[in-house]
Amino acid sequence: MKLAVVGGGSTYTPELVDGFARLRDQLPVDELWLIDPDPRRRELVGGVAQRMFAHAGHPGTIHVTDDLVAGVSDADAVMFQLRIGGQDARQQDETWPHEVCCIGQETTGPGGFAKALRTVPVILEAAELVRRHAKPDAWIVDFTNPVGIVTRALLEAGHRAVGLCNVAIGFQRRFAGQFDVAPDRIRLDHVGLNHLTWERGVHLRGDDGVERDVLPELLGARLDETAESVEMSPALLRLQQAVPSYYLRYFYDHDLVLDEQKHSRTRAEAVRETEQALLERYADPAVVEKPAELEQRGGAYYSEAAIDVISSILGDKGDVQALNVRNDGTFDFLPDDHVIEVPARVTRDAITALPVAPLDADMAGLVAHVAGYERLALEAAVHGGRDRVLRAMWAHPLVGQVDRAEKLTDLLLAANKDLLPWAR
Image 1 (cartoon, rainbow, N blue to C red):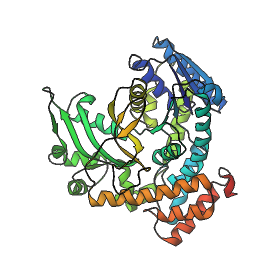
Image 2: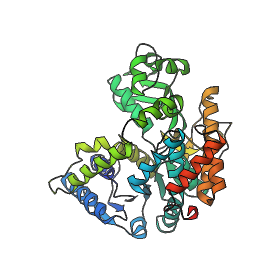
Image 3: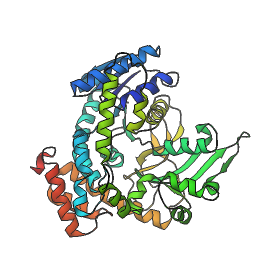
Image 4: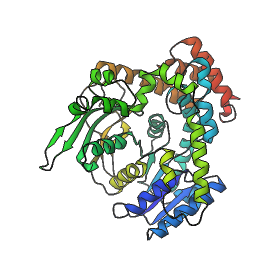
């Protein structure tokens, strides 16, 4: 089995390699190809990855290259984990929206829109090479943000693709720890769009094999603890009778988050510092295991989520995972071709959303609003043009006002003129 990681020089990659090493019975990898244009990252990340496989006694071979065609040729599956513009672009995404009193964030709001504009053209170009050179039935597993928009771009272009996020698996692990059970005994009613999701049920399987929904306990006796874990008001969780993902904070507590952002360093600055420390660790030939500092990088349970979906696809397991897939009638208020994040059945031939209960009006309204923005954002990312950018910006629920959208559009294009050829 050959797997390829486009963006393999990411400091995330040893997390993935650690998972492949630990879970090799679940996913037996013969060749792992790490593809990245940065020679320093190829050397450091590739070196520690190779040492990790050797230390774990893994029989597979890790190859490191900047040649995308060589890396994806005859691959069984290809993972995309790209950050176009690196942490410098992220720093901009997290700051220029503040000039117009909007949050700065790399996946949500104006900053997330900028990331989509930079990312979609590059992803589509790489995906065409995967289509031409990987195995005919190879899947693309996208971990590149904004996952919902990027995954829809891939699907609209006819690629076999699925989007992956670690929010659901993070909640599963958190709830399993709270109830002191193995993670596979927790099943979630996870619904929404990428980075716009709620847990509407938390089903705990007992020793007798019978499930019970422990959400009432999480929103009852454990309400304060549950609300604190997502940094939101207990009253909000009680009213919704659901646990929102942390990303809903950007909508429900926008002004509070904006004030926090203005008085603290950006996430990009923190990640850049962590990445530098990680790369220094990776350069040490004595490092043969995943460094503890990697936990500060984010992406908790990333490797488990990735391995779960790849092994399910290639093993044709037919199990259920929370993934980014076509709507196809799941939410009757969205077009079939929109990408949603819900439990889906995974086979080698198809990944299909399972039916879910209708969303409450407040959830459905926000999902519909963000979905409308996402569709306009993808059109702007594919075709370019200031008017398309302006229309999508205006449509975002965190923007709304025309004058604000005009100013944000100008700021976005100025900050990204070197990464968006049509914006110069």
